[in-house]
Length: 85
Image 1 (tube, rainbow, N blue to C red):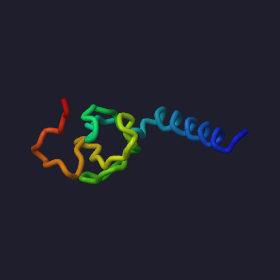
Image 2 (image 1 turned 60 degrees about the vertical axis):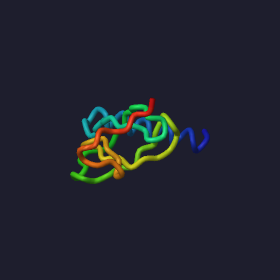
Image 3 (image 1 turned 180 degrees about the vertical axis):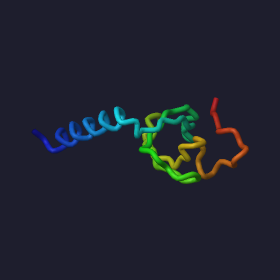
Image 4 (image 1 turned 180 degrees about the horizontal axis):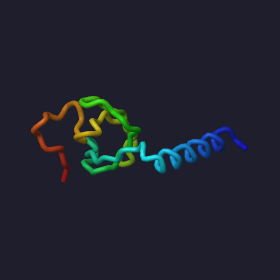
């Protein structure tokens, strides 16, 4: 068995365990590149006003996102998330 395949199986088993235990928190945020709303996941608990790195499925890049609000550091607190048309 290849190392990558073994790691993938191990990670998917860990992800299933986390989902069952309720430690995962899902949230929505907007990709700044495509403007698409995507779902992020993070292990709980996360301290308030802390950002987590998310691998964006819409653009393939990485973004810093506050899981409580779905906002990036560049967005102001009262500002609506950007959406491209």
